[in-house]
Image (cartoon, rainbow, N blue to C red; front, side, top):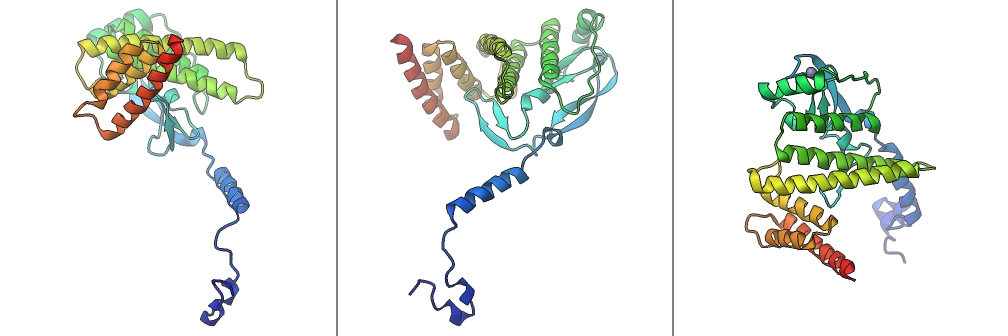
Length: 283
Ligand SMILES: [Zn+2]
Protein backbone atom coordinates (compact mmCIF):
# COMPACT_ATOMS: atom_id res chain seq x y z
CA UNK A 1 0.00 0.00 0.00
CA UNK A 2 1.50 3.29 -1.09
CA UNK A 3 1.25 6.32 1.13
CA UNK A 4 -1.02 7.91 -1.42
CA UNK A 5 -3.24 4.94 -2.12
CA UNK A 6 -6.88 5.76 -1.60
CA UNK A 7 -6.63 9.00 -3.52
CA UNK A 8 -8.89 7.33 -6.06
CA UNK A 9 -11.76 7.65 -3.62
CA UNK A 10 -11.10 11.37 -3.55
CA UNK A 11 -11.35 11.46 -7.32
CA UNK A 12 -7.58 11.76 -7.67
CA UNK A 13 -6.73 8.26 -8.85
CA UNK A 14 -4.27 9.49 -11.45
CA UNK A 15 -2.12 10.91 -8.68
CA UNK A 16 -1.87 7.71 -6.66
CA UNK A 17 1.51 6.80 -8.09
CA UNK A 18 2.94 10.27 -8.39
CA UNK A 19 6.55 10.52 -7.18
CA UNK A 20 6.92 12.91 -4.28
CA UNK A 21 10.16 14.42 -5.42
CA UNK A 22 11.14 15.48 -8.86
CA UNK A 23 13.80 13.42 -10.57
CA UNK A 24 17.09 15.26 -10.15
CA UNK A 25 17.86 14.92 -13.84
CA UNK A 26 14.66 16.61 -14.86
CA UNK A 27 15.38 19.43 -12.45
CA UNK A 28 18.77 20.03 -14.03
CA UNK A 29 17.19 20.14 -17.47
CA UNK A 30 14.61 22.63 -16.25
CA UNK A 31 17.31 24.78 -14.75
CA UNK A 32 19.21 24.79 -18.03
CA UNK A 33 16.01 25.75 -19.83
CA UNK A 34 15.42 28.61 -17.43
CA UNK A 35 18.98 29.78 -17.91
CA UNK A 36 18.46 29.95 -21.67
CA UNK A 37 15.15 31.75 -21.26
CA UNK A 38 16.64 34.24 -18.79
CA UNK A 39 19.77 35.00 -20.80
CA UNK A 40 19.91 38.77 -20.64
CA UNK A 41 21.63 40.87 -23.23
CA UNK A 42 23.82 43.84 -22.45
CA UNK A 43 21.96 46.09 -24.87
CA UNK A 44 18.72 45.54 -22.96
CA UNK A 45 20.32 46.65 -19.69
CA UNK A 46 21.40 50.11 -20.85
CA UNK A 47 19.74 53.29 -22.05
CA UNK A 48 20.79 56.55 -23.67
CA UNK A 49 20.59 59.56 -21.42
CA UNK A 50 20.84 63.15 -22.60
CA UNK A 51 23.29 65.55 -21.02
CA UNK A 52 24.24 69.17 -21.46
CA UNK A 53 27.97 69.56 -21.05
CA UNK A 54 28.83 71.95 -18.20
CA UNK A 55 32.10 72.84 -19.96
CA UNK A 56 31.06 73.54 -23.58
CA UNK A 57 27.22 73.59 -23.37
CA UNK A 58 26.85 70.95 -26.10
CA UNK A 59 24.06 68.39 -25.88
CA UNK A 60 25.02 64.75 -26.18
CA UNK A 61 23.95 61.32 -24.96
CA UNK A 62 25.80 58.75 -22.89
CA UNK A 63 24.90 55.12 -22.30
CA UNK A 64 24.08 54.27 -18.70
CA UNK A 65 23.15 51.03 -17.00
CA UNK A 66 19.55 50.44 -15.91
CA UNK A 67 20.58 49.55 -12.38
CA UNK A 68 17.11 48.40 -11.37
CA UNK A 69 16.99 45.88 -14.21
CA UNK A 70 20.43 44.27 -13.83
CA UNK A 71 20.63 41.22 -11.58
CA UNK A 72 23.41 41.31 -8.99
CA UNK A 73 25.43 38.09 -8.98
CA UNK A 74 27.88 38.93 -6.23
CA UNK A 75 30.58 41.27 -5.04
CA UNK A 76 34.37 40.99 -5.24
CA UNK A 77 36.33 41.58 -2.01
CA UNK A 78 37.12 45.16 -3.10
CA UNK A 79 33.37 45.88 -3.45
CA UNK A 80 33.13 45.53 -7.23
CA UNK A 81 29.57 44.43 -8.00
CA UNK A 82 29.14 41.69 -10.62
CA UNK A 83 25.93 41.66 -12.66
CA UNK A 84 24.34 39.14 -14.97
CA UNK A 85 24.95 40.02 -18.62
CA UNK A 86 26.65 43.39 -18.11
CA UNK A 87 29.85 44.89 -16.76
CA UNK A 88 28.63 47.92 -14.81
CA UNK A 89 32.07 49.56 -14.88
CA UNK A 90 31.72 50.16 -18.63
CA UNK A 91 28.84 52.56 -18.07
CA UNK A 92 30.04 54.75 -15.22
CA UNK A 93 31.87 57.51 -17.07
CA UNK A 94 29.95 60.33 -18.74
CA UNK A 95 31.97 61.88 -21.57
CA UNK A 96 31.23 64.89 -23.73
CA UNK A 97 32.32 63.84 -27.25
CA UNK A 98 32.65 67.49 -28.30
CA UNK A 99 35.11 68.93 -25.75
CA UNK A 100 36.46 65.76 -24.12
CA UNK A 101 35.29 66.56 -20.61
CA UNK A 102 34.63 63.27 -18.82
CA UNK A 103 33.86 62.33 -15.23
CA UNK A 104 32.20 59.62 -13.22
CA UNK A 105 28.44 60.12 -13.31
CA UNK A 106 28.27 61.42 -9.72
CA UNK A 107 30.82 64.17 -10.42
CA UNK A 108 29.90 65.15 -13.97
CA UNK A 109 27.75 68.21 -13.28
CA UNK A 110 29.57 69.35 -10.16
CA UNK A 111 32.26 71.38 -11.86
CA UNK A 112 33.18 74.98 -11.05
CA UNK A 113 33.71 77.63 -13.74
CA UNK A 114 37.41 77.68 -12.85
CA UNK A 115 37.65 73.94 -13.37
CA UNK A 116 35.73 74.17 -16.66
CA UNK A 117 38.23 76.76 -17.84
CA UNK A 118 41.11 74.39 -17.07
CA UNK A 119 39.42 71.55 -19.01
CA UNK A 120 38.92 73.88 -21.98
CA UNK A 121 42.54 75.01 -21.94
CA UNK A 122 44.25 71.72 -21.30
CA UNK A 123 41.94 69.17 -22.91
CA UNK A 124 39.34 70.61 -25.28
CA UNK A 125 41.79 72.53 -27.45
CA UNK A 126 43.67 69.47 -28.61
CA UNK A 127 41.42 66.49 -27.94
CA UNK A 128 40.05 64.56 -30.91
CA UNK A 129 37.28 62.07 -30.26
CA UNK A 130 36.03 59.72 -32.93
CA UNK A 131 32.27 59.27 -32.81
CA UNK A 132 31.28 55.93 -31.33
CA UNK A 133 28.57 54.00 -33.12
CA UNK A 134 28.36 50.73 -31.17
CA UNK A 135 25.12 49.62 -29.57
CA UNK A 136 26.98 48.83 -26.34
CA UNK A 137 30.33 50.17 -25.16
CA UNK A 138 33.28 47.98 -26.07
CA UNK A 139 36.06 47.62 -23.52
CA UNK A 140 38.33 49.78 -25.68
CA UNK A 141 35.72 52.54 -25.74
CA UNK A 142 35.22 52.28 -21.98
CA UNK A 143 38.99 52.42 -21.41
CA UNK A 144 39.15 55.62 -23.44
CA UNK A 145 36.37 57.14 -21.31
CA UNK A 146 38.21 56.27 -18.08
CA UNK A 147 41.47 57.71 -19.39
CA UNK A 148 39.72 60.99 -20.19
CA UNK A 149 38.00 61.01 -16.78
CA UNK A 150 41.30 60.41 -15.02
CA UNK A 151 43.26 63.01 -16.94
CA UNK A 152 40.32 65.42 -16.57
CA UNK A 153 40.37 64.90 -12.78
CA UNK A 154 44.08 65.77 -12.70
CA UNK A 155 43.61 68.85 -14.91
CA UNK A 156 40.65 70.19 -12.89
CA UNK A 157 42.48 69.55 -9.59
CA UNK A 158 39.77 67.18 -8.37
CA UNK A 159 39.77 65.98 -4.79
CA UNK A 160 42.07 63.06 -4.05
CA UNK A 161 39.07 60.83 -3.31
CA UNK A 162 37.60 61.48 -6.77
CA UNK A 163 40.88 60.53 -8.45
CA UNK A 164 41.18 57.43 -6.26
CA UNK A 165 37.60 56.43 -7.08
CA UNK A 166 38.26 56.70 -10.83
CA UNK A 167 41.35 54.49 -10.39
CA UNK A 168 39.29 51.94 -8.45
CA UNK A 169 36.51 51.77 -11.05
CA UNK A 170 39.01 51.75 -13.91
CA UNK A 171 40.68 48.79 -12.19
CA UNK A 172 37.32 47.03 -12.06
CA UNK A 173 36.84 47.70 -15.78
CA UNK A 174 40.23 46.18 -16.49
CA UNK A 175 39.34 43.10 -14.40
CA UNK A 176 36.09 42.73 -16.34
CA UNK A 177 38.00 43.02 -19.61
CA UNK A 178 40.33 40.20 -18.53
CA UNK A 179 37.36 38.05 -17.49
CA UNK A 180 35.76 38.56 -20.89
CA UNK A 181 39.02 37.69 -22.70
CA UNK A 182 39.38 34.49 -20.67
CA UNK A 183 35.98 33.34 -21.93
CA UNK A 184 37.31 33.34 -25.49
CA UNK A 185 38.54 30.11 -27.05
CA UNK A 186 42.04 31.40 -27.58
CA UNK A 187 42.62 34.18 -25.05
CA UNK A 188 45.17 36.81 -25.97
CA UNK A 189 47.63 36.07 -23.15
CA UNK A 190 49.83 39.03 -23.95
CA UNK A 191 46.92 41.47 -23.68
CA UNK A 192 45.75 39.75 -20.49
CA UNK A 193 49.18 40.16 -18.89
CA UNK A 194 49.23 43.82 -19.88
CA UNK A 195 45.75 44.42 -18.47
CA UNK A 196 46.58 42.63 -15.23
CA UNK A 197 49.60 44.83 -14.72
CA UNK A 198 47.39 47.87 -15.44
CA UNK A 199 44.82 46.69 -12.90
CA UNK A 200 47.55 46.37 -10.31
CA UNK A 201 48.82 49.86 -10.99
CA UNK A 202 45.31 51.30 -10.81
CA UNK A 203 44.58 49.56 -7.51
CA UNK A 204 47.89 50.76 -6.12
CA UNK A 205 46.86 54.33 -6.99
CA UNK A 206 43.40 53.81 -5.52
CA UNK A 207 45.04 52.56 -2.32
CA UNK A 208 47.39 55.51 -2.17
CA UNK A 209 44.61 58.02 -2.96
CA UNK A 210 42.06 56.69 -0.48
CA UNK A 211 44.72 56.46 2.23
CA UNK A 212 45.46 60.15 1.75
CA UNK A 213 41.79 61.15 1.35
CA UNK A 214 40.87 59.35 4.58
CA UNK A 215 43.21 61.67 6.46
CA UNK A 216 42.29 64.89 4.69
CA UNK A 217 38.64 64.69 3.57
CA UNK A 218 35.23 64.37 5.21
CA UNK A 219 32.81 61.47 4.97
CA UNK A 220 30.77 60.38 3.11
CA UNK A 221 33.45 59.97 0.48
CA UNK A 222 32.44 59.05 -3.08
CA UNK A 223 29.09 57.98 -1.61
CA UNK A 224 30.77 55.68 0.92
CA UNK A 225 30.66 56.06 4.69
CA UNK A 226 33.75 55.77 6.87
CA UNK A 227 33.27 52.08 7.64
CA UNK A 228 32.97 51.20 3.95
CA UNK A 229 36.08 53.19 3.03
CA UNK A 230 37.98 51.52 5.89
CA UNK A 231 36.88 48.12 4.66
CA UNK A 232 37.96 48.92 1.12
CA UNK A 233 41.32 50.21 2.37
CA UNK A 234 41.80 47.04 4.42
CA UNK A 235 41.28 44.91 1.30
CA UNK A 236 43.67 47.05 -0.75
CA UNK A 237 46.26 47.16 2.05
CA UNK A 238 46.26 43.37 2.18
CA UNK A 239 46.72 43.15 -1.58
CA UNK A 240 49.84 45.30 -1.32
CA UNK A 241 51.10 43.30 1.69
CA UNK A 242 50.52 46.09 4.22
CA UNK A 243 49.10 43.43 6.51
CA UNK A 244 49.43 45.44 9.74
CA UNK A 245 47.48 48.35 8.23
CA UNK A 246 44.84 45.94 6.96
CA UNK A 247 44.39 44.15 10.29
CA UNK A 248 44.21 47.41 12.19
CA UNK A 249 41.43 48.72 9.93
CA UNK A 250 39.52 45.43 10.11
CA UNK A 251 39.87 45.39 13.89
CA UNK A 252 38.37 48.87 14.13
CA UNK A 253 35.39 47.79 11.97
CA UNK A 254 34.79 44.65 14.02
CA UNK A 255 34.71 46.61 17.30
CA UNK A 256 32.95 49.68 15.85
CA UNK A 257 29.62 50.73 17.38
CA UNK A 258 28.29 52.22 14.19
CA UNK A 259 29.19 49.42 11.74
CA UNK A 260 26.27 47.20 10.74
CA UNK A 261 26.40 43.41 11.35
CA UNK A 262 26.78 42.65 7.63
CA UNK A 263 30.00 44.60 7.20
CA UNK A 264 31.29 43.29 10.54
CA UNK A 265 30.83 39.75 9.21
CA UNK A 266 32.67 40.68 6.03
CA UNK A 267 35.46 42.22 8.11
CA UNK A 268 35.76 39.03 10.21
CA UNK A 269 36.03 36.89 7.05
CA UNK A 270 38.58 39.27 5.60
CA UNK A 271 40.57 39.22 8.84
CA UNK A 272 40.90 35.44 8.58
CA UNK A 273 41.99 35.77 4.97
CA UNK A 274 44.55 38.47 5.78
CA UNK A 275 45.96 36.47 8.70
CA UNK A 276 46.44 33.48 6.39
CA UNK A 277 48.06 35.64 3.69
CA UNK A 278 50.38 37.18 6.27
CA UNK A 279 51.57 33.75 7.42
CA UNK A 280 52.13 32.67 3.82
CA UNK A 281 54.13 35.80 3.24
CA UNK A 282 56.33 35.21 6.28
CA UNK A 283 57.18 31.64 5.28
ZN1 LIG B 1 31.66 69.45 -23.68
